[in-house]
Length: 262
Image (cartoon, rainbow, N blue to C red; front, side, top):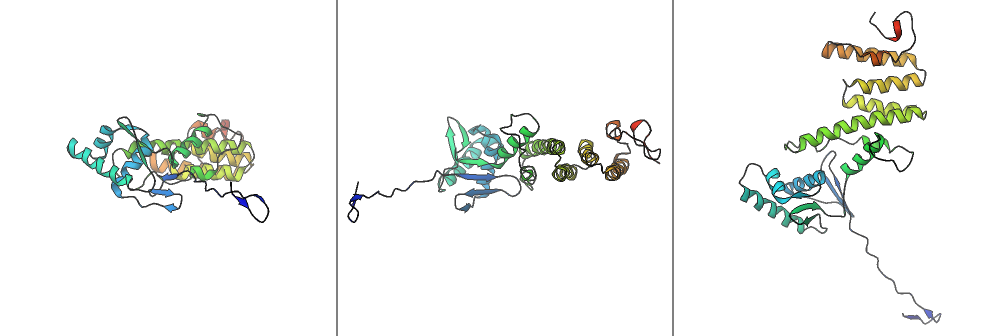
């Protein structure tokens, strides 16, 4: 240890602590790879590989090659995969690691889909929640999974995440309503309606918030708008479950607890 001559005390040597590499892969909305110092440019072919691994975790090389290059020979597909991996290895931070015969994202790469999935599953009760506070609504408001990408392997994942988002928004609305946080509860329910306008359970969530606030007129107005939409689009009426949320009669329009047309 060096000495400080002016104080006759040991002089502490400055040490540089290297922060661990980290990167964030963003698959909701436009593809983005965010490094420690900002966005990272990624070639289109490498984007597809990173997105696929971000959604499927560790995958055998043969499956990756066959899925990402389905219209060429097996030899050509494996050659294309090797080229993409070579390009990724030239990046400043490792993005992909080999696990035997499988490929995975490197340990330092986080994926927004994973954050969203954990938050949504906690809301729906499928995963234990570390606390009693619901996740921020922004976690459930991110855009569609890789819009504009038409690869066949994207479609089932896109639908899975859409359905998970809908269930999570409904659960969030219920939780917030119970806590009396009506503005946020309504925001979550209406967000769900915007994603899927014909989803009755989402409209039930909206009506439940209005009724909890004793905004009967708002609840009726929303019900009637949904009834007209169902009639125009499908020629059907709302279910007894939604109609039965109004347990009182208003000017004779609610016989036996249900709404009817004039």
